[in-house]
Structures are given as structure tokens and as C-alpha cells.
Image (tube, rainbow, N blue to C red):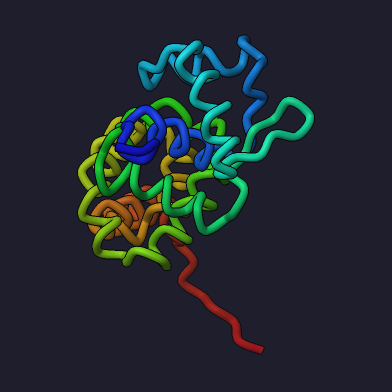
Length: 178
């Protein structure tokens, strides 16, 4: 019946793990993030104090972050993937465009630590759905596939095929080799 039994703590640690460091007292920044995941600001602040006392978090210059990278990977995995306490689909839809690098920074160590198949099996449906929703934006599709292409191989191959298929044909009939 400790702090790890409280889903709110795992959710908060998962959010912090994804964003790496959050200006936790800056309401203009933090409240929209908390609203996406349906967490009240007062609950967030209360739990931050508890988690800091347990030395899971460190606070420096009004920013909060998880004190150790391996713990960060664990809490990202536990909250967004293993237990689905926070929706990976919501994370992807809400933050991929502005935080592409954070997905890469979180997914690669998560796969390395907890296994590619464990991660893929939990996020593939969300990735396919998101990929289909951005098909008209070739640049964003390419960015998505550069991070997650190895999870959604069929969509990756189709994207490559479509790019090649839409490319103008080369009508040069004469090739010179020097």
C-alpha cells in the first residue's frame, strides 16, 4: 500500500519520463499537459512533493525530472506501455509533432530494456492508426516512420512504394559510363 500502488504516481512519473524535465510550477505549460491525461494540477503538485521525498524525482530551478535514466525508462514503459495507465495513442496524437525527439529518446531505451516485441505488441495499433491519419502529410509521415518504421513495416514499405511510384519516370534512353 505504498506510493507505487497509486496509479497517479505512476502516471506522473510516466509523464515526466516522456518530457524529461517539466517546469512543474508553470501552470501555462503544465496544466495543458495534465489536462490531456486527465490529472488535476493540485494532485500533481501534491504527488511531486511526495515523489521528491522518496528521491524518485529531483527538482532544480523549478524543473522536475526523474533522478535516474533507468528509472525514467521503467516509468515510461510501465505507464504508457505495460499497464496502459496513460494512453500511448493520446501521447502520439498530442505530442508527436512537437516532440518527435522525445519519442525516439523514450522508445529506443524501452525496447532495449523490455524487448522490442513487448513494446511493439502494445503500441502497433496506435501507430498504424496515427500513420493513416497523417498520410496526406508526406513530411510528417516520413518523420513518423523514421522513429517508428520498424514497428509498422507494412506501412513503411507502402510509404516507400508510393513515394517511388509517384516519382517522375526517367525517360533517358542513353546512359554514358565513363
